[in-house]
Length: 302
Length: 260
Ligand SMILES: Nc1ncnc2c1ncn2[C@@H]1O[C@H](COP(=O)(O)OP(=O)(O)OP(=O)(O)O)[C@@H](O)[C@H]1O
Ligand SMILES: [Mg+2]
Image (tube, rainbow over the protein chains, first blue to last red):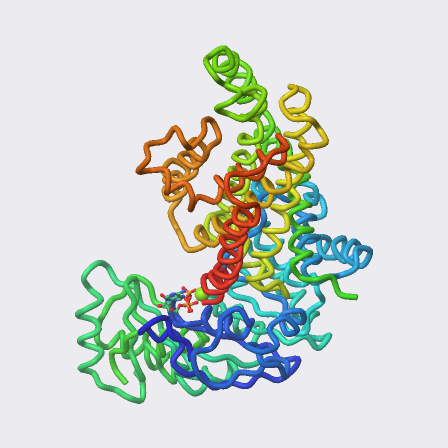
């Protein structure tokens, strides 16, 4: 539970994460993901409730706990006066790492985030994605047992994202526990063993990506795009059709209409029968994104 | 043996200083040299030619009287600067404090580490000042080394108080305002350029609550080899009291602002 004055940012989340697990927090902007991560990271006291991280009480054993955590904050906050390598060096010294250890670890981490050739450059001229990679390297400087990643790959190009996922897999295989927030559903599906979807400080669903998809959305999705003004009448007619076998649920997005269905072909038939005449029509398997929309967006038919 | 956490913060400052020492140190040295030349020597010649100077100032020359005051005022200003822009940057503009506290470093370690760094920086500037002042013949070098102590103490106390205040502020205008309406008047009217007895009677009591005046009194007494206006312990006590309040309130406010 986390309150800021009278406002409750995290209203009560009940989760347990096992060692070596990759666990995700999903949720729309302002859901309380960062607030939750900061409490777990022992930089923000809990307002109420019970929290243990690596067996330690963040309130009483903050120093000891943070020594064993790696944190990728949502904002980069690198030291502009220092070079790339020095940012890692100074941060490593905060953990009291011996200088020789630190030197070899800096080489290794810069290599991993592919910034070795920029090691003596100041931070400011780096691109956004490079800064992000440096922050990720910084979070690993103390060889943490648990890494908290708040939107780790926001701003990374696809290659860099895949490279990071690969590194996170490696960490996981070595037994490191990962806790991450993300707005990328593919990232959550790729990385997370289990995840929770948060909304307004509450958990609205939890489980493995597969479980969530099976539980909350039907198997297939029809994506329909219409010319301006045609979407609303199409929704009306699909609602009137009220055909549960073919149409499970509708989700209206600003740019398209999603038709959830157990059977994509049957749903296409329905669309054709009604002569809706969409601009484009595409069938795909339901994904985590659909779960997210379902749980945190508004719904038309249930 | 684990390094005390505040010392790790200090080490970080030392690293950063490798890149920034030119700008900050040169500025802190050139200004006193200019003031000593323009006011101490230039204006001083006029003052010394005037009536009854040595008696009014209890000093051989205006330059000898002015230099210790300038020393205390310069170190106060250096301390104030240490509590302003670095704190604003760490807290808001760049946000480095917010990532630093993800390590074992606590907000209070940040506050204390910053303060330790300020001790070093102010000591260096103070020693350089004394060297320059000795070259001007304004303060004998040996006495100058003693006189640096209260001046530096008051400077570090200023850092503590200023950073405690600045950590709670979010707009840079506040810094400009502080410089204009607090630091500059203190710099000018704490018995630095002229004795406070010259101030209107109504204003004189105000001076007693300004730490810099006490710092100037102590610094000048040590530099000239006399006694300050009030007993030594009183002067020292006022500065120390501000320091204690600054440290206690500062550590708390750093924690309150960073651990939300
Ligand atoms: N220091 C603070 N003081 C007051 N309110 C805060 C503070 N930090 C966060 N909040 C509020 O708490 C709520 C949750 O914020 P939080 O940053 O945890 O969301 P989030 O899920 O991380 O969102 P995003 O996806 O945009 O990063 C928001 O309404 C936010 O305004
Ligand atoms: Mg967030």
